[in-house]
Length: 502
Image 1: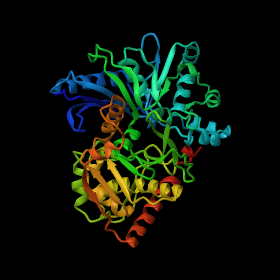
Image 2: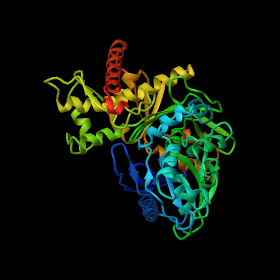
Image 3: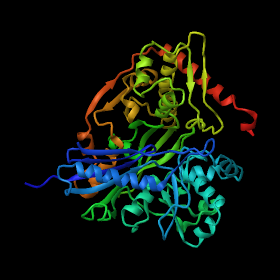
Image 4: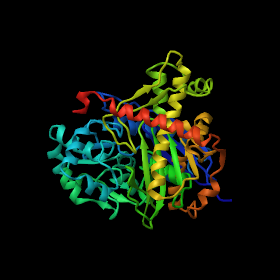
């Protein structure tokens, strides 16, 4: 009898590094997780230590493998990661020249304004599918090249290497042999041409970024490198790479155009698969690469909500209204509604469809009877409202109604949030048993490349539904609540201090 083969998924997220071993039936055999730190050196700035990320990822890899019943039977490795976060490092020493600038960081807002003033907004949208925003990697890399003494000269001499977190990890995990990324991560940089599948020379010149520091671009499924045997014996192939949200889209088996998923993590990330068709949004969404399985690029529409699960942590750590994240649900369930309280968590501006870098968070509708229960419920409802802002735009852009939303991520375990998402959206919310869809998705990409999965359609057979939340709210109530939410958002956008406007 043949010994079962396992797939190792490395899931490098914004707040933790995880490793999960999956068997051929898609079940988790073992897993390990460690938290990683975020630092905030100035208001709006967000950084991480790349070496901490690397060490943490190797530690959880070894831990998960050590827990497995047959650790020597690992057939493939998949890597999924936080996306727009950028690292610049020394080619010789492997040491970063500066902390990783995290996707949430807003330090380059002024660079974005300069890019727009130079008339590059439309060329960027046409070539990359993206809007000009500090969220993406390009302006982060521009900042590093301009602000860190000596860095530009060293980059032009070929002494430095750059990449998103997948690239940083693979270079080290392969024993510094492979400087690569996949199309899904490349599409988040703002200098990748989604039509040609290559780095765009005109944009690189406009941004002043030397192409020599950038990685080779590969499909999402296929052998990209081999693990250094000092990390894991056996020269195991790394053969699945995807940005975390594209991996989740794949893991949710959203394989046909129109299928849509929402990952409720630190932020919310809503993606609709559009197949081989590039759809330009007229409602401020972005067009992104979904994946390339070796047969050509497939695309998706995406809307990103910057603050979702993170606002629950804000309630716990900053306001100290709760002591555990799970307590937010308990408080929210103690009241029937928010009693007119609305919370707009624009801590670092607003993402899709507003793309307002200057907006800041606001709580509206407070009265003398407002309680922490009302605020907790408003926090949860804000996650659903922001998600619906994006879903409404997707339906208008594609002229395709969304009848079901597949969900995953940490906050998707909240029955109250999932039911409110169904109610306020008027769509069915489909939560699977396997909410680890990001890791599962990249494991499936690696499984296809290694032959453990014979075709993408096999994923649908593995995916098991946990619960289907059906909408119960009346149309009139839904309309009234949406109107109140949009008024609160308008207030958050308009209530910007004069110095921030300038």
